[in-house]
Length: 131
Image 1 (spheres, rainbow, N blue to C red):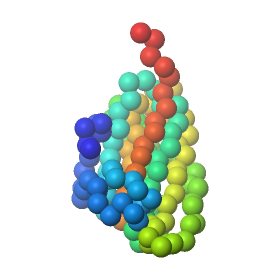
Image 2: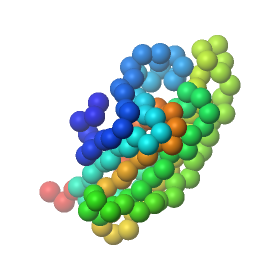
Image 3: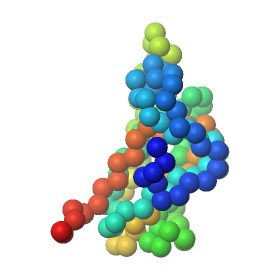
């Protein structure tokens, strides 16, 4: 659901059907080019992973970080592709992006869609709470 996001913009849709093509993943966010998801952390970003399925051609996601949630700067992420064939279920192409740690005060992560994609899972690492 969208409740864990700081903000979102563009053409986004929660996907819960057609799970066979996405290896039984029943909770995804589908987006089109120009759509964005923004996550806010309580403490500085220490890196992360973003799991994605592509219903058509691979359309790389763009990532950017911010300390204030207003001014974002591009962040490079490495992508690992999983070139499994369509198999009996017509699997979609999938990839995992690894995000680097942000600079000292980065607490916002923006994910921008450059084409059709379905974000399956976002794992953002931050220091443990000192409660």
